[in-house]
Image (cartoon, rainbow, N blue to C red; front, side, top):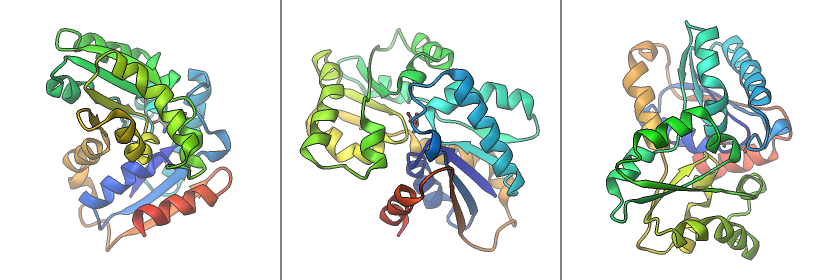
Length: 248
Ligand code: DGL
């Protein structure tokens, strides 16, 4: 069984891709809505939330834990792997490598939370590709709140998206990386603001492919068809709305 968690509904963008590749699996999704957003919280706080949610998912019978949250991956995956060596963890991080390979201006723009951008893992990643491209960053301030409230298209949503995307365009980024799993739900708005010549990369399909590649053997024969259980530490309204929107 595959456990997937995020601070809120963002991780459903990863679950959607998992479902495409592994449609006959059993999933448990946990939205930490009562503690959302994670982006501005301390590393210790997010690590403790990730620990508690992991224990919950293991109790439900999950044997693979997908941390469908860049902020929680940055804060917690290293510690969780050390503390629970028998558990399979898959995390998500900004897709700088494919972006650097595709950029013509050699400037990659990363949209992410403050927590992700100051994490050691992210800084190492930027360092590794600094010969291939310049990386410019912008915090998607207000993006998580828009997605949690289901606002993807209003004039206010456009204003919020423009404020974060414009500095990246001004720095000549021609490829944008969505470094937060909430942001793919604003894909249409981000593309509208960025214009047709800018490519926008969502790393969720790559994460799903990694789960399939690494762990398909572990899942084989375990399931008799698709099932999903959804949990939230807070209100379930946003979760229900997004789930219906995505998976029907
Ligand atoms: N969806 C999350 C991420 O990928 C967390 C956003 C937040 O809670 O601030 O970073």
